[in-house]
Length: 326
Ligand SMILES: NC(=O)C1=CN([C@@H]2O[C@H](COP(=O)(O)OP(=O)(O)OC[C@H]3O[C@@H](n4cnc5c(N)ncnc54)[C@H](OP(=O)(O)O)[C@@H]3O)[C@@H](O)[C@H]2O)C=CC1
Ligand SMILES: O=C1O[C@H](CO)[C@@H](O)[C@@H]1O
Figure 1 (tube, rainbow, N blue to C red):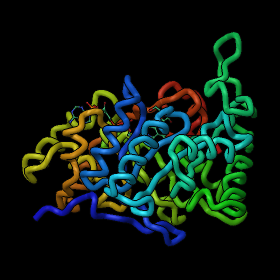
Figure 2: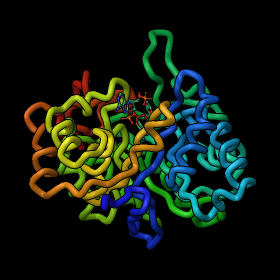
Figure 3: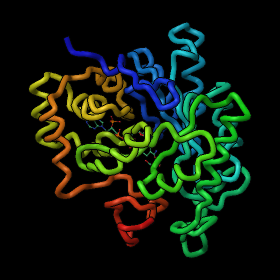
Figure 4: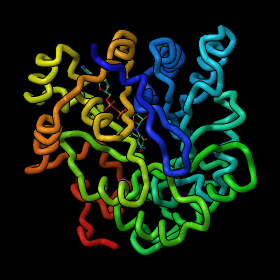
């Protein structure tokens, strides 16, 4: 019998567990749809929801959670909820967290992530999320290459861990090896337990994954099918494996991560899809390696946001900074 992805958990470096399959919540055109997506996912067995202040979807997730708790479908402690602080809110991550908690209707999150190792010039409410000068250029609060204020922002997450009960664990997202190296050297007490990054067969980045593994940082893979348009699902090998194991292409894309110890965060507006992509086919080591090899020749990153320039990632479209950035 095929195992279920919803039955798999991983242990983080602080001893807490993270469910392998998490629902992504980047907003669809109509963010109200998130409520039904979350209810559908939890009823199908998902226990992990990935969100962020930046997505503007937390109030709809909160409505779903309220209903699920009231109906007795799950209890708060059954779920693993992640939220994130956006770069423009870097001066006061606790305020960002408080807004997220209020919208989610929760008194704690399981994981609070620094969304990017970048500091943007927002006001005390993190607005605007993308501050720009009159020429349309992003306004940073430091130089994106040499500045280390992103580490100050991480220290604020450590303070929240120490002084409140609003988070169970803290971590990071979109950290490259050079950024992570600097952060790990500067951590006061609470190492990041997770690095959430784009990862799929068209974007192999074993060096970053190995660095995280060696340092006890769990990888959560975002955009597992390559985001909008789902380019990963068009790969011939993914389709062949789906036929061989009699599962959907999405389940192969998820299994690629889960079988290698990474949690994975698929998103869908299609309720049938959310429900049906929970099987975990037992791919062989050779098949996992073959999936990895697909992108080695010409890797493609689909989340190439401007604030990712110069962070030391390989293959960032439009990034003119040196690959040897440190
Ligand atoms: N930390 C970070 O900076 C980031 C975190 N994330 C997190 O990761 C989550 C997932 O990443 P995301 O970029 O949203 O996208 P995904 O890689 O999960 O792709 C979702 C898209 O793929 C489509 N899709 C999925 N399956 C199929 C299929 N079988 N056929 C056709 N289309 C399909 C979906 O369409 P449909 O709706 O029709 O199913 C949707 O448009 C996010 O929602 C967010 O929670 C994402 C980006 C950055
Ligand atoms: O989490 C995120 O989602 C958006 C778009 O997918 C990206 O900018 C951000 O990091």
